[in-house]
Image 1 (cartoon, rainbow over the protein chains, first blue to last red):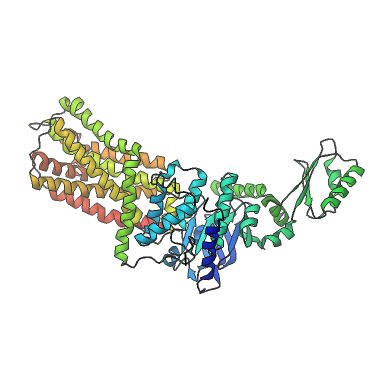
Image 2: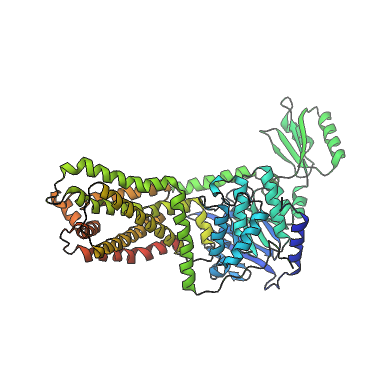
Length: 351
Length: 271
């Protein structure tokens, strides 16, 4: 497959690293105090972040955190109530036309024409970006090859699989080689294999100096793809930094202990109360703590539990999930947060 | 040096006037909608079979019961069927626009540097193309079921000209409805509840003077009757009265008002 980092494509990518154009501004995207409300619900409550040219920023948050709203404002689909956003120095409100020709948008749902073929979709959007027919032909062929869609290129999109749609969707937004790309949950709903292919493509895209704003609910995805991560919740930025920064706060790995039904859960909790980043879920009878002591820590915890006469059903290590990040940063699970948002929405409806 | 497929340097657009690009954008999106005509077979069948069914039902089931004086019923009916078919055909803009809005492809179009009216113009244009094909089919079939027109070349030109203008007028109203409805289901029935009464309470299938007085007043003065009377006069030589210029005036008036309203509604949704 042509996109899986073959020698040829790597060579192609490296060549473009040499000819990075002279930046007008250091930051490709600057967002200051962005606010947006629908009726009484504050979706964005003063969001700030900057993205350096040629880097990837992941906007990490649960459903309803304001990720898509941010992307929609930056891609000129929505007007903000307050605040400012600049892309390559252009204002998203006052210079929307300028911005539209330098951005590519891949939304949460594949925005393709179902009845047209893959090739026709690329041609159509190419012409709407106002490229010459020559450029359109050349780019279409390049992108079809790169995204492994040549064989399917003359079939209607309605016959495509989910993974193919996402790839074509991304290809379409790259037709004009825009310097800034928005990817709104690019792998949500994809099977693991298609997800890895998308990750590969995104990584290659980054290596050419394209600036990317990516939204995701998946800590792992942000970790793999992003230079910086901005965690948002309830329309506010609650943490920002590199993946390593966040992990340091959350703990690189989690140790999860499931307490057996026969033992007292509260007693078990007392045993590990000194441990870092502890949180407990009495319903599922789970104790979770930062795993920083390796085998030694594991042994110690097991011994202490044993001494207290507590039986353990199951013990496991896992890397931090979005839930862990949220628990550490906010003290709530993402489910609770989603619940709160729903309650707010219902209240507004009642009014 | 080989260029990277992901070359970060944006490909420069072609240089043309903004008028050129407005026309080009509209044409690109019109081409898209026109391709849908042949690829969306469900819609294709509905668009052509529905008027044909009405035509044959009225021609053979109701013909004996409706008195159209000296004019044979089939000669009376063709103008009515043509206009009804144009009205229903132009209503596809409502549905296709609602589908686009629901599927999210509109967000992609909105994020592109294109003329804001292009998507609407595209749908309206494809209605026009589909409708002109339908006109040819209906006229073709009408000859098979006993239609004898008296129209000369000038009349045929007038008939096609008015048919196109009428199609555009209804399509632009449909565009407004498509932007106002909240779902594809709603788009489907809005057309029916607006167009059914308009076509039946008109001179399409029966002479209005057989209707109760309030209905007769409405039928005599609404735009569809003007269009039907004008086309009927050119087709089979019935008296035209004021219908000719009134029909053109109605269509042009509707287009002048509904075009900017639809474009404004479409722009307003970006807020």
